[in-house]
Amino acid sequence: MDLFNNLALGFATATSLENLFFCLIGVLLGTLIGVLPGIGATATIAMLLPITFQLEPVSSLIMLAGIYYGAQYGGSTTAILINMPGESSSAVTAIDGYQMARKGRAGAALAIAAIGSFFAGTVSTFLVAIFAPPLTQIALQFGAAEYFSLMVVGLVSSIALAHGSIVKALAMVALGLLLGLVGTDIYTGTPRFTLGIREYADGLNFVAVAVGVFGIAEILRNLENEKTRSVLMAKVSELMPSRADFKAMVGPVLRGTAIGSILGILPGGGAILAAFASYTVEKKVSKHPEEFGHGAVAGVAGPESANNAGAQTSFIPLLTLGIPANPVMALMIGAMIIQGIVPGPNVATEQPALFWGIIASMWIGNLMLVILNLPLIGLWVKLLTIPYYVLFPIIMAFCSIGVYSVNSNVYDLYAVAFFGLIGYALLKLRCEPAPLLLGFVLGPLLEENLRRAMILSRGDPATFVTRPISAALLFLAALVLVIVFLPSVKKKREQVFVEED
Image (cartoon, helix red, strand yellow):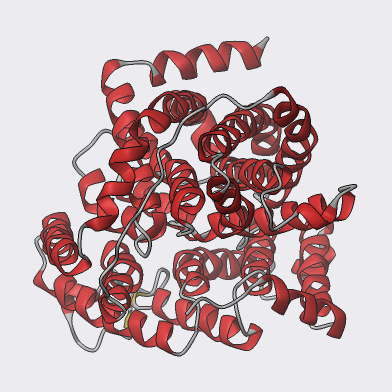
Protein backbone atom coordinates (compact mmCIF):
# COMPACT_ATOMS: atom_id res chain seq x y z
CA MET A 1 0.00 0.00 0.00
CA ASP A 2 2.88 2.33 0.81
CA LEU A 3 4.28 1.75 -2.68
CA PHE A 4 1.06 2.94 -4.32
CA ASN A 5 0.85 5.96 -2.01
CA ASN A 6 4.44 6.86 -2.79
CA LEU A 7 3.89 6.45 -6.54
CA ALA A 8 0.79 8.63 -6.29
CA LEU A 9 2.93 11.30 -4.61
CA GLY A 10 5.56 10.88 -7.32
CA PHE A 11 3.12 11.24 -10.20
CA ALA A 12 1.47 14.23 -8.52
CA THR A 13 4.91 15.86 -8.36
CA ALA A 14 6.05 14.83 -11.85
CA THR A 15 2.81 15.89 -13.57
CA SER A 16 2.85 19.49 -12.36
CA LEU A 17 3.08 21.87 -15.33
CA GLU A 18 6.55 23.06 -14.37
CA ASN A 19 7.99 19.56 -14.00
CA LEU A 20 6.29 18.29 -17.17
CA PHE A 21 7.86 21.21 -19.04
CA PHE A 22 11.36 20.46 -17.76
CA CYS A 23 10.89 16.74 -18.41
CA LEU A 24 9.97 17.59 -22.02
CA ILE A 25 12.98 19.91 -22.33
CA GLY A 26 15.21 17.17 -20.94
CA VAL A 27 14.08 14.39 -23.28
CA LEU A 28 14.17 16.69 -26.33
CA LEU A 29 17.63 17.94 -25.48
CA GLY A 30 18.74 14.40 -24.68
CA THR A 31 17.53 13.17 -28.05
CA LEU A 32 19.29 16.06 -29.76
CA ILE A 33 22.65 15.40 -28.17
CA GLY A 34 22.16 11.67 -28.69
CA VAL A 35 21.75 12.36 -32.41
CA LEU A 36 24.84 14.61 -32.64
CA PRO A 37 27.93 12.38 -32.44
CA GLY A 38 30.73 13.52 -30.18
CA ILE A 39 28.83 15.51 -27.55
CA GLY A 40 27.18 12.85 -25.40
CA ALA A 41 24.97 12.93 -22.33
CA THR A 42 27.87 13.30 -19.88
CA ALA A 43 29.32 16.39 -21.56
CA THR A 44 25.87 17.98 -22.00
CA ILE A 45 24.80 17.45 -18.40
CA ALA A 46 28.16 18.81 -17.25
CA MET A 47 27.56 21.94 -19.34
CA LEU A 48 24.03 22.38 -17.99
CA LEU A 49 24.93 22.04 -14.31
CA PRO A 50 25.19 25.84 -13.86
CA ILE A 51 21.59 26.25 -15.06
CA THR A 52 20.28 23.80 -12.46
CA PHE A 53 21.44 26.19 -9.74
CA GLN A 54 18.61 28.52 -10.77
CA LEU A 55 15.89 25.85 -10.84
CA GLU A 56 13.90 24.01 -8.21
CA PRO A 57 15.66 20.79 -7.12
CA VAL A 58 12.94 18.46 -8.45
CA SER A 59 12.71 20.25 -11.80
CA SER A 60 16.47 20.33 -12.33
CA LEU A 61 16.96 16.63 -11.54
CA ILE A 62 13.98 15.60 -13.69
CA MET A 63 15.46 17.56 -16.61
CA LEU A 64 18.94 16.05 -16.17
CA ALA A 65 17.48 12.55 -15.91
CA GLY A 66 15.49 13.17 -19.11
CA ILE A 67 18.68 14.19 -20.91
CA TYR A 68 20.35 10.94 -19.87
CA TYR A 69 17.77 8.43 -21.05
CA GLY A 70 16.72 10.68 -23.96
CA ALA A 71 20.28 10.40 -25.28
CA GLN A 72 19.88 6.61 -25.46
CA TYR A 73 16.90 7.07 -27.82
CA GLY A 74 18.59 9.73 -29.95
CA GLY A 75 21.74 7.70 -30.41
CA SER A 76 19.78 4.83 -31.96
CA THR A 77 18.09 7.07 -34.56
CA THR A 78 21.23 8.02 -36.45
CA ALA A 79 22.78 4.60 -35.76
CA ILE A 80 19.95 3.00 -37.73
CA LEU A 81 19.49 5.61 -40.46
CA ILE A 82 23.06 6.60 -41.37
CA ASN A 83 25.25 4.14 -39.44
CA MET A 84 26.47 6.94 -37.16
CA PRO A 85 25.77 6.13 -33.49
CA GLY A 86 25.33 9.29 -31.47
CA GLU A 87 25.95 7.44 -28.20
CA SER A 88 28.52 4.74 -27.44
CA SER A 89 25.76 2.39 -26.31
CA SER A 90 24.11 2.73 -29.74
CA ALA A 91 27.15 1.42 -31.60
CA VAL A 92 25.79 -2.12 -31.22
CA THR A 93 22.39 -1.09 -32.61
CA ALA A 94 24.08 0.24 -35.76
CA ILE A 95 25.34 -3.24 -36.70
CA ASP A 96 21.93 -4.65 -37.63
CA GLY A 97 19.81 -1.49 -37.54
CA TYR A 98 21.67 0.09 -40.46
CA GLN A 99 21.44 -3.12 -42.46
CA MET A 100 17.66 -3.12 -41.94
CA ALA A 101 17.58 0.49 -43.19
CA ARG A 102 19.59 -0.46 -46.30
CA LYS A 103 16.95 -3.10 -47.04
CA GLY A 104 14.21 -0.44 -46.91
CA ARG A 105 13.10 -1.35 -43.38
CA ALA A 106 14.33 1.78 -41.59
CA GLY A 107 10.85 2.54 -40.25
CA ALA A 108 10.46 -0.94 -38.78
CA ALA A 109 13.94 -0.78 -37.21
CA LEU A 110 13.19 2.58 -35.59
CA ALA A 111 9.83 1.32 -34.29
CA ILE A 112 11.41 -1.85 -32.90
CA ALA A 113 14.05 0.26 -31.12
CA ALA A 114 11.40 2.62 -29.73
CA ILE A 115 9.07 -0.17 -28.54
CA GLY A 116 11.92 -2.13 -26.96
CA SER A 117 13.24 1.00 -25.28
CA PHE A 118 9.83 1.98 -23.91
CA PHE A 119 9.13 -1.50 -22.55
CA ALA A 120 12.56 -1.72 -20.94
CA GLY A 121 12.22 1.78 -19.51
CA THR A 122 8.82 0.96 -18.04
CA VAL A 123 9.97 -2.30 -16.44
CA SER A 124 13.20 -0.84 -15.07
CA THR A 125 11.37 2.20 -13.68
CA PHE A 126 9.03 -0.20 -11.89
CA LEU A 127 12.09 -2.06 -10.54
CA VAL A 128 13.52 1.23 -9.25
CA ALA A 129 10.22 1.91 -7.47
CA ILE A 130 10.20 -1.58 -5.90
CA PHE A 131 13.83 -1.96 -4.85
CA ALA A 132 14.76 1.61 -3.94
CA PRO A 133 12.75 1.84 -0.68
CA PRO A 134 14.03 -1.43 0.92
CA LEU A 135 17.59 -0.62 -0.12
CA THR A 136 17.16 2.81 1.45
CA GLN A 137 16.07 1.19 4.71
CA ILE A 138 19.13 -1.09 4.63
CA ALA A 139 21.39 1.87 3.87
CA LEU A 140 20.07 3.71 6.92
CA GLN A 141 21.70 0.96 9.02
CA PHE A 142 25.13 1.63 7.49
CA GLY A 143 27.85 3.17 9.61
CA ALA A 144 31.01 4.97 8.56
CA ALA A 145 32.93 1.70 8.01
CA GLU A 146 30.19 0.29 5.72
CA TYR A 147 30.02 3.48 3.66
CA PHE A 148 33.80 3.51 3.25
CA SER A 149 33.80 -0.11 2.05
CA LEU A 150 30.85 0.53 -0.26
CA MET A 151 32.68 3.41 -1.91
CA VAL A 152 35.76 1.23 -2.32
CA VAL A 153 33.57 -1.29 -4.17
CA GLY A 154 32.22 1.50 -6.38
CA LEU A 155 35.68 2.77 -7.29
CA VAL A 156 37.06 -0.73 -7.93
CA SER A 157 34.07 -1.58 -10.13
CA SER A 158 34.53 1.63 -12.11
CA ILE A 159 38.14 0.57 -12.74
CA ALA A 160 37.10 -2.92 -13.83
CA LEU A 161 34.41 -1.65 -16.20
CA ALA A 162 36.32 1.30 -17.64
CA HIS A 163 37.45 1.29 -21.25
CA GLY A 164 41.05 0.51 -22.10
CA SER A 165 43.92 -0.22 -19.74
CA ILE A 166 43.11 -1.16 -16.15
CA VAL A 167 46.31 0.53 -15.00
CA LYS A 168 45.26 3.79 -16.68
CA ALA A 169 41.80 3.53 -15.09
CA LEU A 170 43.43 3.02 -11.69
CA ALA A 171 45.61 6.09 -12.28
CA MET A 172 42.51 8.12 -13.18
CA VAL A 173 40.79 7.12 -9.94
CA ALA A 174 43.90 8.06 -7.96
CA LEU A 175 44.07 11.44 -9.71
CA GLY A 176 40.39 12.05 -8.97
CA LEU A 177 40.91 11.20 -5.30
CA LEU A 178 43.85 13.63 -5.12
CA LEU A 179 41.81 16.42 -6.72
CA GLY A 180 39.11 15.78 -4.14
CA LEU A 181 41.63 16.55 -1.37
CA VAL A 182 42.03 20.17 -2.50
CA GLY A 183 40.47 22.54 0.03
CA THR A 184 40.22 22.72 3.80
CA ASP A 185 40.76 19.71 6.06
CA ILE A 186 37.36 18.72 7.43
CA TYR A 187 38.62 18.14 10.99
CA THR A 188 41.54 20.53 11.51
CA GLY A 189 40.45 23.38 9.24
CA THR A 190 43.92 23.51 7.65
CA PRO A 191 44.10 24.49 3.96
CA ARG A 192 45.75 21.85 1.79
CA PHE A 193 46.84 21.79 -1.87
CA THR A 194 45.27 25.21 -2.47
CA LEU A 195 48.54 26.76 -3.79
CA GLY A 196 47.81 29.74 -1.55
CA ILE A 197 44.68 30.66 -3.54
CA ARG A 198 41.89 31.57 -1.12
CA GLU A 199 39.20 30.81 -3.71
CA TYR A 200 40.14 27.11 -3.54
CA ALA A 201 39.71 26.92 0.25
CA ASP A 202 36.34 25.19 -0.29
CA GLY A 203 37.84 22.80 -2.83
CA LEU A 204 37.75 22.70 -6.60
CA ASN A 205 34.42 23.64 -8.12
CA PHE A 206 32.72 20.40 -9.22
CA VAL A 207 30.94 22.15 -12.10
CA ALA A 208 34.19 23.65 -13.42
CA VAL A 209 36.01 20.29 -13.29
CA ALA A 210 33.12 18.41 -14.94
CA VAL A 211 32.62 20.99 -17.71
CA GLY A 212 36.36 21.08 -18.41
CA VAL A 213 37.12 17.35 -18.37
CA PHE A 214 34.01 16.30 -20.29
CA GLY A 215 32.57 19.29 -22.13
CA ILE A 216 35.59 21.31 -23.29
CA ALA A 217 37.77 18.22 -23.85
CA GLU A 218 35.10 16.61 -26.08
CA ILE A 219 34.74 19.83 -28.06
CA LEU A 220 38.48 20.00 -28.67
CA ARG A 221 38.59 16.37 -29.75
CA ASN A 222 35.72 16.79 -32.20
CA LEU A 223 37.14 20.00 -33.66
CA GLU A 224 40.36 18.12 -34.30
CA ASN A 225 38.47 15.56 -36.38
CA GLU A 226 36.11 18.01 -38.05
CA LYS A 227 35.40 17.14 -41.67
CA THR A 228 32.73 17.76 -44.26
CA ARG A 229 29.79 15.47 -43.75
CA SER A 230 27.11 14.59 -46.25
CA VAL A 231 24.00 13.04 -44.75
CA LEU A 232 21.82 11.03 -47.05
CA MET A 233 18.68 9.48 -45.65
CA ALA A 234 16.13 7.32 -47.42
CA LYS A 235 12.47 8.04 -46.88
CA VAL A 236 11.22 6.41 -43.71
CA SER A 237 7.93 4.61 -44.13
CA GLU A 238 5.99 1.67 -42.66
CA LEU A 239 6.77 2.41 -39.03
CA MET A 240 4.62 -0.46 -37.79
CA PRO A 241 6.61 -3.71 -37.42
CA SER A 242 5.13 -6.83 -39.01
CA ARG A 243 3.71 -9.74 -37.03
CA ALA A 244 6.92 -11.67 -37.68
CA ASP A 245 8.92 -8.73 -36.30
CA PHE A 246 6.87 -8.69 -33.10
CA LYS A 247 7.36 -12.45 -32.72
CA ALA A 248 11.11 -12.10 -33.27
CA MET A 249 11.54 -9.21 -30.84
CA VAL A 250 9.65 -10.53 -27.79
CA GLY A 251 12.46 -12.74 -26.49
CA PRO A 252 15.31 -10.27 -27.15
CA VAL A 253 13.37 -7.41 -25.51
CA LEU A 254 12.70 -9.49 -22.37
CA ARG A 255 16.28 -10.74 -22.17
CA GLY A 256 17.72 -7.29 -22.94
CA THR A 257 15.54 -5.71 -20.24
CA ALA A 258 16.74 -8.26 -17.68
CA ILE A 259 20.41 -7.87 -18.63
CA GLY A 260 20.25 -4.08 -18.65
CA SER A 261 18.37 -3.90 -15.36
CA ILE A 262 21.10 -5.91 -13.62
CA LEU A 263 24.17 -4.40 -15.27
CA GLY A 264 22.88 -0.83 -14.95
CA ILE A 265 23.30 -1.02 -11.17
CA LEU A 266 27.02 -1.84 -11.47
CA PRO A 267 29.37 1.15 -11.24
CA GLY A 268 31.16 2.07 -14.46
CA GLY A 269 29.57 0.12 -17.31
CA GLY A 270 25.85 0.73 -17.28
CA ALA A 271 24.14 1.12 -20.63
CA ILE A 272 27.25 0.49 -22.77
CA LEU A 273 28.14 -2.82 -21.16
CA ALA A 274 24.48 -3.88 -21.18
CA ALA A 275 24.15 -3.30 -24.94
CA PHE A 276 27.27 -5.35 -25.73
CA ALA A 277 26.21 -8.14 -23.35
CA SER A 278 22.71 -8.29 -24.84
CA TYR A 279 24.02 -8.54 -28.41
CA THR A 280 26.39 -11.35 -27.40
CA VAL A 281 23.59 -13.26 -25.64
CA GLU A 282 21.19 -12.90 -28.58
CA LYS A 283 23.78 -14.19 -31.00
CA LYS A 284 24.46 -17.18 -28.72
CA VAL A 285 20.80 -18.18 -28.26
CA SER A 286 19.67 -17.48 -31.84
CA LYS A 287 18.80 -20.41 -34.10
CA HIS A 288 20.12 -18.35 -37.02
CA PRO A 289 23.28 -16.57 -35.78
CA GLU A 290 24.37 -16.03 -39.39
CA GLU A 291 21.65 -13.34 -39.70
CA PHE A 292 23.41 -11.08 -37.19
CA GLY A 293 25.23 -8.30 -38.99
CA HIS A 294 22.81 -8.53 -41.89
CA GLY A 295 19.66 -6.99 -40.42
CA ALA A 296 18.57 -9.29 -37.56
CA VAL A 297 15.60 -7.95 -35.59
CA ALA A 298 17.07 -9.38 -32.37
CA GLY A 299 20.27 -7.38 -33.00
CA VAL A 300 18.22 -4.18 -32.68
CA ALA A 301 15.60 -5.11 -30.09
CA GLY A 302 17.95 -6.69 -27.53
CA PRO A 303 20.68 -4.01 -27.26
CA GLU A 304 18.18 -1.14 -27.39
CA SER A 305 16.16 -2.65 -24.54
CA ALA A 306 19.35 -3.36 -22.57
CA ASN A 307 20.88 0.11 -22.83
CA ASN A 308 17.64 1.85 -21.82
CA ALA A 309 17.05 -0.53 -18.91
CA GLY A 310 20.64 0.05 -17.80
CA ALA A 311 20.19 3.80 -17.98
CA GLN A 312 17.15 3.64 -15.70
CA THR A 313 18.40 1.20 -13.05
CA SER A 314 21.64 3.16 -12.65
CA PHE A 315 19.46 5.51 -10.58
CA ILE A 316 19.04 2.82 -7.88
CA PRO A 317 22.46 3.23 -6.19
CA LEU A 318 22.20 7.00 -6.68
CA LEU A 319 18.82 7.37 -4.97
CA THR A 320 19.36 4.78 -2.23
CA LEU A 321 23.04 5.01 -1.30
CA GLY A 322 24.20 8.28 -2.82
CA ILE A 323 26.76 6.28 -4.85
CA PRO A 324 27.09 7.08 -8.60
CA ALA A 325 26.98 4.09 -10.98
CA ASN A 326 28.50 6.06 -13.87
CA PRO A 327 29.76 9.56 -14.74
CA VAL A 328 26.24 10.86 -15.43
CA MET A 329 25.11 9.77 -11.98
CA ALA A 330 28.19 11.49 -10.53
CA LEU A 331 27.02 14.68 -12.23
CA MET A 332 23.53 14.13 -10.80
CA ILE A 333 25.10 13.97 -7.33
CA GLY A 334 26.87 17.23 -8.14
CA ALA A 335 23.52 18.77 -9.08
CA MET A 336 22.01 17.59 -5.78
CA ILE A 337 24.91 19.06 -3.80
CA ILE A 338 24.56 22.38 -5.67
CA GLN A 339 20.92 22.41 -4.55
CA GLY A 340 21.93 21.80 -0.93
CA ILE A 341 20.72 18.18 -0.91
CA VAL A 342 22.90 15.55 0.77
CA PRO A 343 22.83 12.44 -1.47
CA GLY A 344 22.05 9.20 0.31
CA PRO A 345 19.25 7.21 1.95
CA ASN A 346 17.91 10.20 3.88
CA VAL A 347 16.62 11.77 0.64
CA ALA A 348 13.74 9.26 0.52
CA THR A 349 12.59 10.09 4.05
CA GLU A 350 13.38 13.80 4.17
CA GLN A 351 12.31 14.74 0.62
CA PRO A 352 9.86 12.05 -0.56
CA ALA A 353 8.35 14.32 -3.25
CA LEU A 354 11.77 14.70 -4.89
CA PHE A 355 12.63 11.00 -4.52
CA TRP A 356 9.37 9.66 -5.96
CA GLY A 357 8.94 12.55 -8.39
CA ILE A 358 12.18 11.56 -10.16
CA ILE A 359 11.06 7.92 -10.37
CA ALA A 360 7.62 8.83 -11.77
CA SER A 361 9.16 11.25 -14.27
CA MET A 362 11.19 8.39 -15.79
CA TRP A 363 8.04 6.67 -17.04
CA ILE A 364 6.54 9.96 -18.22
CA GLY A 365 9.77 10.83 -20.02
CA ASN A 366 9.88 7.46 -21.77
CA LEU A 367 6.29 7.95 -22.95
CA MET A 368 7.21 11.40 -24.29
CA LEU A 369 10.15 9.92 -26.18
CA VAL A 370 8.01 7.33 -27.95
CA ILE A 371 5.40 9.91 -28.94
CA LEU A 372 7.87 12.60 -30.06
CA ASN A 373 10.83 10.79 -31.55
CA LEU A 374 9.41 9.06 -34.60
CA PRO A 375 7.66 12.16 -36.08
CA LEU A 376 10.83 14.24 -35.61
CA ILE A 377 13.25 11.83 -37.33
CA GLY A 378 13.77 14.11 -40.33
CA LEU A 379 14.59 17.09 -38.12
CA TRP A 380 17.11 15.15 -36.02
CA VAL A 381 19.04 13.94 -39.04
CA LYS A 382 19.10 17.39 -40.68
CA LEU A 383 20.82 18.73 -37.58
CA LEU A 384 23.80 16.55 -38.48
CA THR A 385 24.59 18.92 -41.34
CA ILE A 386 25.49 21.74 -38.92
CA PRO A 387 29.32 22.04 -38.94
CA TYR A 388 31.02 21.56 -35.60
CA TYR A 389 33.08 24.73 -36.05
CA VAL A 390 29.81 26.70 -36.01
CA LEU A 391 28.13 24.80 -33.20
CA PHE A 392 30.92 24.43 -30.67
CA PRO A 393 32.06 28.05 -30.14
CA ILE A 394 28.50 28.83 -29.10
CA ILE A 395 28.55 25.90 -26.67
CA MET A 396 31.90 26.98 -25.20
CA ALA A 397 30.65 30.53 -24.62
CA PHE A 398 27.49 29.15 -23.04
CA CYS A 399 29.59 26.91 -20.72
CA SER A 400 31.83 29.77 -19.61
CA ILE A 401 28.91 32.06 -18.80
CA GLY A 402 27.14 29.26 -16.92
CA VAL A 403 30.16 28.26 -14.83
CA TYR A 404 30.91 31.88 -13.89
CA SER A 405 27.28 32.49 -12.90
CA VAL A 406 27.38 29.80 -10.16
CA ASN A 407 29.86 31.55 -7.85
CA SER A 408 30.85 34.67 -9.84
CA ASN A 409 34.41 33.47 -9.41
CA VAL A 410 36.91 34.07 -12.22
CA TYR A 411 39.11 31.24 -10.89
CA ASP A 412 36.36 28.81 -11.93
CA LEU A 413 36.91 29.90 -15.54
CA TYR A 414 40.64 29.25 -15.16
CA ALA A 415 39.75 25.82 -13.80
CA VAL A 416 37.49 25.09 -16.79
CA ALA A 417 40.27 25.99 -19.23
CA PHE A 418 42.88 24.03 -17.27
CA PHE A 419 40.78 20.89 -16.88
CA GLY A 420 39.64 21.17 -20.50
CA LEU A 421 43.27 20.85 -21.57
CA ILE A 422 43.86 18.09 -19.01
CA GLY A 423 40.78 16.23 -20.30
CA TYR A 424 41.93 16.61 -23.91
CA ALA A 425 45.39 15.29 -23.00
CA LEU A 426 43.79 12.31 -21.25
CA LEU A 427 41.73 11.53 -24.34
CA LYS A 428 44.85 11.66 -26.53
CA LEU A 429 46.59 9.29 -24.10
CA ARG A 430 43.54 6.97 -24.22
CA CYS A 431 42.83 7.50 -20.53
CA GLU A 432 39.10 7.42 -19.86
CA PRO A 433 38.09 10.44 -17.73
CA ALA A 434 35.03 8.74 -16.18
CA PRO A 435 36.93 7.06 -13.30
CA LEU A 436 38.59 10.44 -12.58
CA LEU A 437 35.20 12.08 -12.05
CA LEU A 438 33.97 9.21 -9.88
CA GLY A 439 37.14 9.48 -7.78
CA PHE A 440 36.69 13.25 -7.50
CA VAL A 441 33.07 12.91 -6.34
CA LEU A 442 33.63 10.00 -3.97
CA GLY A 443 37.04 11.17 -2.66
CA PRO A 444 35.79 13.60 0.02
CA LEU A 445 33.07 11.15 1.12
CA LEU A 446 35.61 8.31 1.21
CA GLU A 447 37.98 10.38 3.36
CA GLU A 448 35.24 11.58 5.70
CA ASN A 449 33.94 8.06 6.36
CA LEU A 450 37.45 6.62 6.71
CA ARG A 451 38.40 9.17 9.35
CA ARG A 452 35.06 8.92 11.12
CA ALA A 453 35.33 5.12 11.29
CA MET A 454 38.87 5.38 12.67
CA ILE A 455 37.77 7.91 15.30
CA LEU A 456 34.84 5.71 16.40
CA SER A 457 37.12 2.67 16.62
CA ARG A 458 39.83 4.68 18.42
CA GLY A 459 42.31 4.17 15.61
CA ASP A 460 41.76 0.43 15.12
CA PRO A 461 41.73 -0.39 11.38
CA ALA A 462 40.32 -3.85 12.18
CA THR A 463 36.88 -2.20 12.36
CA PHE A 464 36.62 -2.52 8.56
CA VAL A 465 36.95 -6.31 8.64
CA THR A 466 35.28 -7.12 11.97
CA ARG A 467 31.98 -5.55 10.94
CA PRO A 468 30.25 -8.17 8.72
CA ILE A 469 28.80 -5.89 6.02
CA SER A 470 32.00 -3.87 5.70
CA ALA A 471 34.11 -7.04 5.49
CA ALA A 472 31.81 -8.53 2.83
CA LEU A 473 32.03 -5.37 0.71
CA LEU A 474 35.84 -5.24 0.95
CA PHE A 475 35.99 -8.94 0.01
CA LEU A 476 33.78 -8.19 -3.01
CA ALA A 477 36.11 -5.36 -4.08
CA ALA A 478 39.15 -7.64 -3.79
CA LEU A 479 37.35 -10.38 -5.72
CA VAL A 480 36.49 -7.99 -8.56
CA LEU A 481 40.14 -6.92 -8.84
CA VAL A 482 41.36 -10.54 -8.90
CA ILE A 483 38.80 -11.56 -11.54
CA VAL A 484 39.53 -8.63 -13.84
CA PHE A 485 43.23 -9.50 -13.90
CA LEU A 486 42.61 -13.13 -14.89
CA PRO A 487 44.02 -13.71 -18.43
CA SER A 488 40.74 -15.05 -19.88
CA VAL A 489 38.69 -12.18 -18.46
CA LYS A 490 41.28 -9.62 -19.53
CA LYS A 491 41.17 -10.92 -23.11
CA LYS A 492 37.37 -10.89 -23.21
CA ARG A 493 37.35 -7.39 -21.73
CA GLU A 494 39.59 -6.12 -24.52
CA GLN A 495 37.16 -7.52 -27.09
CA VAL A 496 34.15 -5.83 -25.51
CA PHE A 497 35.65 -2.44 -24.70
CA VAL A 498 37.00 -1.31 -28.04
CA GLU A 499 38.74 2.04 -27.86
CA GLU A 500 37.16 4.69 -30.04
CA ASP A 501 39.41 6.70 -32.31
